[in-house]
Amino acid sequence: MKRNKGITLIALTITIIILLIVASISTYSGIETIKSSKFNKFTQELEIMQAQVNLLYDKYYSNGQETTKKIGKDIPSGKMDKATKALRACNVEESEKGEYRLFDEETIKELGVEGITREYLVNIRRRDIISLEEFQYNGISYYRLSQIHDKVQVEKSADYEEVSFEISDPIKTVAGWEIKISNIRFSEHVGKGKIQYRKEGTTDVWETIEVNDIERTYTFTMPELALYEVKVTDVREKSKTERTGVPIPEDAELSKIPGEADSINNGIVVYVRNNGVPIDWSKTEEELKNQHDQFVWIPVRNAIVSNESELAKAIAKEQYPMAIINGKNSSGTTNYKGILYNFELEGNKVVAKLEEKSKGYDEPIYLSDNTNADTGDKNNVGITPSSIQNEFNEMVNKVSYSNGFWVGRYETTNMENNSSVDNTNKVAVKKGINVGLCNASWYRMYAQQKKYSELVLTKSQKLSSSMIWGSQWDQIMVFMKNIKNGDSYYIINAAGIGNFSGPDDGYSGGTPTNTGCFKVNNIYDLAGNAWDWTLEALNSSYRVARGGCSINGAAHFKSAIIRNHTDMDSGDLPYFGSRMVLLYGTIK
Image: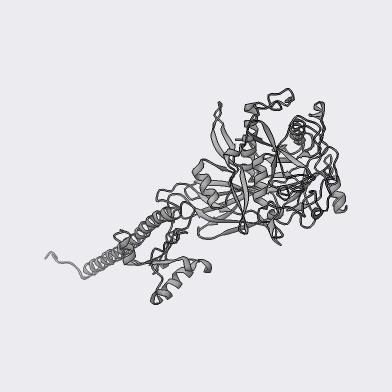
């Protein structure tokens, strides 16, 4: 039998099919490799441009002052359609479109950047880079890094490693209290993550919002006003937690009187329950004000700065911290020093400037240079150099924790010039009272206001009370600095809306009258009625009082920012009272 040494037709057909399959796979693989290579090149260009724009931002914007220097070119009419399409695809706000400049080949070469083949739309202020033309990859259009998985614009440099975001105070709407999260920046070029939120101090399950576009502003609405924790986490599990809102004391209720709980900017008011009994809101407004202690929320964002450079940048942005880090104590705890301000009218605007050190105002200070000082025998409330520093540290940490503090709606009353009742006397913050408003020494006022939280706010474990500090008074002035009074501003000139001496104030002089004369942002008598003692010091010799009083008639005394001082240990001072604050939070 003759052996068949050739191949059959079937075998040949199979071989050809296999070769065709292999060839098609190789061709497809080659095409995908080319596509992937081009996509990687596009991504690399975006990263190079992002790094360059970060440098431009650091050079022209990082000191808080925007440059007038225009880098790049106006978008020419021939490229306007492409630019409009790109900006629309990236959800750029209409108000910001004019800030984008064209970085063409010439502009990019002038910056000394090599290897860039595309043209870009650039907004240096927002550190935003958008390709003028889209890049199509696997059916998806890309214009910027934030649209690419795990790639995102960074805030300052390519090795940026911190999560950051901006958070708003809650705003009342028909649906509830709305909170906005914006300007999200993730770590290490990550572009996705999540926002979680829940009521502070609870073990409630975190509500979650997925973040797929860091250029968006994310919004959620809560049913009630409270203090909320908001945590932003990227896909690499790096996170940052902030708090926003208002911590309502457990022993108090949010006001139900119109205009008293509608806006944080206008002053949120709480009424304290008497002996834990729920408040009867069917009573008249006047009855409620006369029968319950009341406090108003003062918002304070970015309370602490680390150094003088940070302080200067903050003030340039019209942000006003209340404390600066001042070393550590023997136990390793961070100490703080108060930041005090001087408010002046420049043109038609109130400007806050750092108080001149030469004037001698400072805090926290242990008074050691006066016969009436803390070293004297009238100091029987335990004030020492370390205790006054620790109290200030606690105040700053709590304000930073909750982003604000509660201030007495009225000047404190029912204070007694009797040291034996320091631990038992319940002071009051009600309307229509002048008993115990004045005629007590600074030390009695200090001790009895400090005891208030323990005696009255028995359910509020994170809440403490204190005489107001000077830096807190200045934060109230910041809170009110844009409130007009005729042709001037309230904190500068309170004539007509302060209990002062003079016909224009409707008062002819004499001792302070009942609390609750004049209201601004739901707070009464910050200017006029009685001088309000604080914990602020003058030259290690005196404590400082703020706000003027009823016998002041001269124009320069009719002000909420005015300062005064006198003997602290006298119990016979008919024009000097005080004002209390409540602090919420944990101590670092």
